[in-house]
Length: 283
Image (cartoon, rainbow, N blue to C red; front, side, top):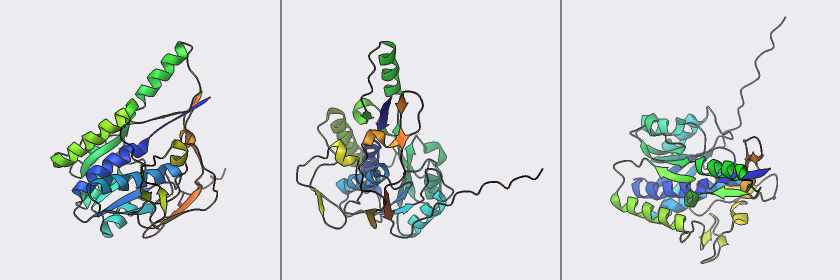
């Protein structure tokens, strides 16, 4: 059995580069799913990307506590009402982007190209492309070369990209994005490179220090610029990034774990409102 995952934080950073250049209110919003290191890392990376083109940016977060939730629209609306004019999400539907369009704001697609769902609001989509990994894994298996070494692929391997940029994205922002992509591909650019502080002012990475995968797999704090607080609630255990999700079958596993962290948003924490079981039919 092996584990595999994608470096979604790289796509979040690239979306942030565009968001920082496009915002008019200097306030961004993120609709977040489950408070695990993967999602917290994406929120932070989005903010770091935005700060690279606009140091005055701040990010507001609302948690819906599910990967797919009817609360996404409500969360997006609350962020816009709170001043955010560009939204990103770490949830699995197009509801956030569609809400942005209905309210005259901008946003990003997540995991797949969502331009068709809200073309006026769409600034770009952070996409995951599993094909390169699947092709290599199947080929290695057929050739008898497959090993269970954990895999965590990103822009370098063709697993992560930011696609379908809006026509009105400034040329300077596009050039910055191209530079970031090139740096991620050849390894010359590191998103998580110090100095980086959390939003309480505590230094988490010293100047020129580059975060390793162990550090990235245990992110349980908000960086400077993200509003609210994020603290360890149930566990202080750090989870290696390739084991962060658990949705595939066979000898490859993407692991989803129960949330080890609890994060308070700027406004409120949307509770986990699961639909009740259907009533039992009497016979």
